[in-house]
Image 1: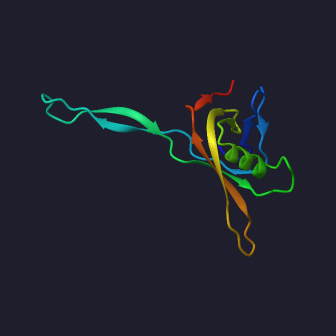
Image 2: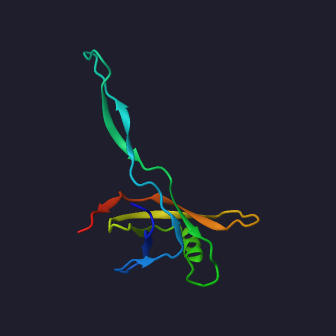
Image 3: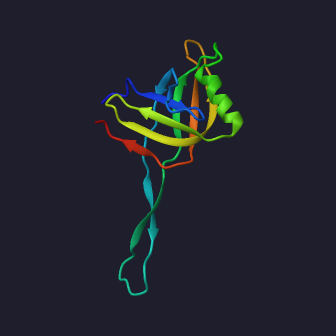
Length: 136
């Protein structure tokens, strides 16, 4: 499946619907690998392990840079970052899969050069588990 058609939305405080953030260019890997925790007893002949908690790492969404309007995603994300608050997000993929999570954000505009576009990256610091909702 292509990433084309994927969307990222956020839910403002008290809202029931997600508002799409336009200009999405790249979506991150989703998921985590649990940390392997050694739990060997004195009677074991080999080391034994259990799965610990997982770390999804940096979830970075890449957007087209546009700061021409008060409701541009670049301004929205900067406002979210400045508030230090936690926001609800939903990624919707082309096949209808939805990934919902809460996160704090940090925003970084990329550099540019001749014939190079300027973009901005939004790094999500997860504050909840990832909830994956399969399409109907």
